[in-house]
Length: 191
Image 1 (cartoon, helix red, strand yellow):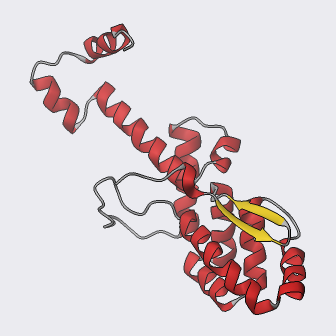
Image 2: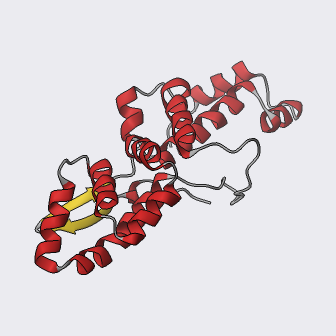
C-alpha cells in the first residue's frame, strides 16, 4: 500500500477566502487533546457544531477567527447550507490527521496495548525528533503520514546497514560484511 503524502491538503472556501487545511502533527495533537478522540470530533462536525468547525479550521490552517468567518458565511448563505458544504471536507481532514492506519502490506491489525490518539501523535513527535533528527518545527509541520513513511525508510536503512531478518539472509548468502556493502554503495556511479 502506497502512502499518500502531498495530496493530503484539503481546500475549503469561506466567503471569498480559500482556506487550505494541512493535517500537520501540531493540528492532530491539538485536536486530539481538545476532543479526546477523533470520533468525538467527527460527531461534533456531523452535528453541525460551529465550534468544532472553527477548531478544525484554526488547527489545520493556522488562522485565528475561523468562527467569525463561519458565522458571517452562515449569515449570508444560511446555516444549513454552510454546514452541508463544510462538514464533508472537515471530516475528511480529521480522518487524515490519524495518518495511515495500515502497514505496507495493508495489514491494519494492531499488536500491543491500545493507546490514545494523543499518545500516538506524541510517539510520532518522538520518532521525528529522536530517530529522524528533525527539528521540533519540522516535526510539527509534517503530517503523520510523512513521519510514518520517513520512519519506515529510516528503519529500512538501519536494517540494510546493521542487519535484520532480511539483511541476515543476504549476509549468509555471501553478500559481504556491512563495511563492504557501505563501500559498495558509495562506490556506485550515478546512472
